[in-house]
Length: 253
Image: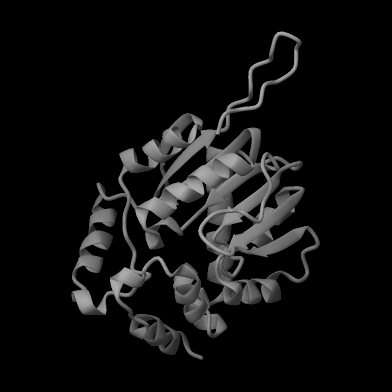
């Protein structure tokens, strides 16, 4: 399938905005073939461009939350695994979670040569497939634009739960208060209501993202302006203070 054909299928895949929260059905539909899936999650279909953008994402993670060779890392909404090939070379193990099994099928094909990768299909919004206090870094990139606000916050809460004390979190989106962000907002607003795709891009405010992390319990919640025109919110799960006997108390969730 040509890039033009894939783009036409993506543009033509519309549904009522009220269906936006039916993420599994929506994104399985976007993953009927590889080109349509790649266009839907990354905006590109050629591997050279996908790899270039993956390098950019890894650089942003390195600059904002750090990447350690001993890290167990989870990506929320990994799609076709655009970032995994690069990032898995810099950590102990990379987990890719997505609500779309069809997207993960494409990811499995792209990543079959990497030994330290695990793909996990999410049953619903959240990270119920992952245990408490088990990961060092959780990140979510180019996903919040497709989620309702309540579901954005749910993933922030769940990231807090699955991170070890001292673990780091990263979430990004297009900001409303920039020229680029306003153009995304107005482009989406121009769709006739009845033809708005359920996966249409929606922006965030800086205060929104900062509030999610603070309310979920993260320390040192910060907003970063990124080179790609996005903003990222980062934070650290608090390390429990030592009790009277020298043991660590369990952090409150």
